[in-house]
Length: 182
Image (spheres, rainbow, N blue to C red):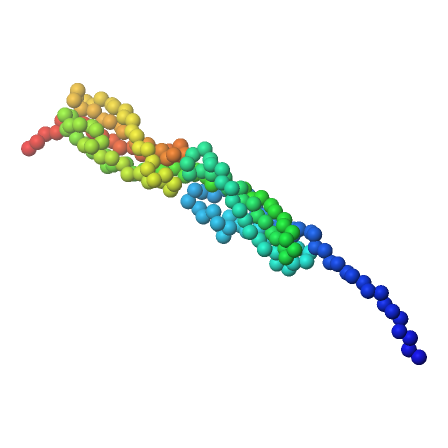
């Protein structure tokens, strides 16, 4: 004889209330021309006790730096599992402008002693910068007397400075002398 034994009903609830474990990429410093996307700055990784592939996302908050091209990006990474549990971590990306502009001096020149020594007559440099579209160009002159009262040698130091204070220099020699015409 087979006897049926009643089995009480049982309810089993599986509750996932544990957020995914997320690991941020390391904090990084990049140049102002570098890409700030995760392909360049790193991507977070995450694991979860129930969800094999939690959804990873990020949100940026940007704080201005000491000059227009510099900034700090506070990147908050999040990993969310199928139950809506979210783990977060913070990556700090420092965007820096430490590269000086490039400057190319005009050629050294010899001019008549009565000619103007202004750049319109002796030449202007060219200057470019990786972050600042128009670096500031200035010059200073040091004059040395020549063998005659009208003759002199000018050592013109050109400087190019970007918005972050990075500076490059070059030197142009201008000789002012009596020129004999034949």
